[in-house]
Length: 290
Image (cartoon, rainbow, N blue to C red; front, side, top):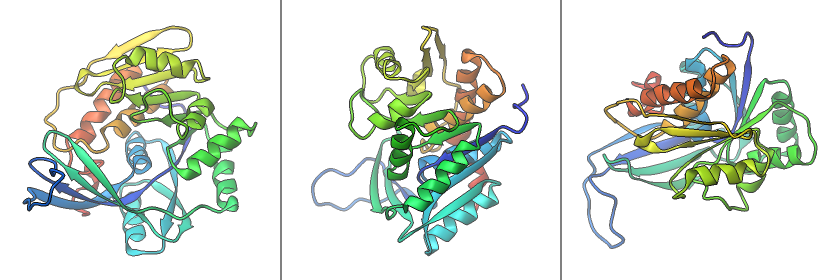
């Protein structure tokens, strides 16, 4: 199904330069030596992942992110542009960097080596203006995203907000403004034993649609009207689990803009997740750029 003509998506949130370290098991909390199975330097960040997979669908998408005038910032910008994604960079004292300890089973410990400095009011104004001109505004978890969400809750106009709460368990002071400002909210089931109840609790606070990914068990969705939908995960040989949720989000959003029903959107998300899971990068288009 073709995309809605001239659909524009603005994504606000993290882009980072990451060092992925593959281990046979996560380190025990005691002094010891451990040999890595391999390592890789590559693009990271939940918003960068979403933009790569949205661009994969031919969408008019731009990432708004804080980047430093450092080597890592140049690497982030170069990787995104080489992949055909647009980025509007805002000045930061440093570029976000992570060291991710990974296992073949998909376990992960993320060490934040550097985080961006605070955005100026003027930069937040510019991001908000870009979102007002878009068809969909993706507001990811970040300090800038929190400022955008608070402005929306205070009455600022703009495009429908889609947000990704990741491992939200139902109650979090930081997540709350993102949830209440959103039209569509995504999460995973890592912090809940009852994803249907979790999604309903989200809808009770304002969104029209909630989506929850269940890992290898697929994904489910619940609308404010009570419609339920589910989709199975697609078969895949997992190379790396980084960015699978962001790929799912992008596939779902692209299908929604193309007019798919809820079942079709979930299936499109599952298909796009396979693209990320099959690559050691957020998207295979980055292969060879590490």
